[in-house]
Length: 204
Image (cartoon, rainbow, N blue to C red):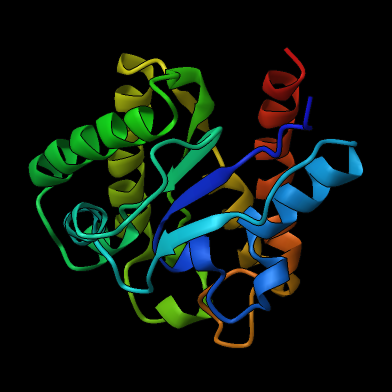
């Protein structure tokens, strides 16, 4: 029998592609590296993400992108640009439901092979200087409540990374030179959480 090579699809925005960091430092690539070190065979992650994408833009792109019929794992991190642009939470809720159903379908209808990540809090970055960080925090928290609720409803995993990103207020090594996006060091924190889930499921 030939060895199974696991596949991983990462859906999202600038945080998923690792804006301002080298490709291998983005969390999807770091996740795969951790899994390979654990002795699992993983192909390079497939990434469908773009800086600035909202949930509806990601959904629209997925509908017009040629993807594999299924993947072993799918991650979803989306919503920061909805919050940044002041878009409706109700519309985001609808978009997220569509995206989760699509992600589950792409994960071979295995909901527990889909991992939703919470939205980072950019309001504590130098980029946000002069803005109301408390207001941004509240809005991000509201969007994340929607993400967690949708994940639970659809029986997918939900990983909280928001509090980790808030540490960037004191630790600038967690940020890239653009003072908005997160460094490979912070991506490694997210990757470790994702890899833990994938590792346990891969060995079942």
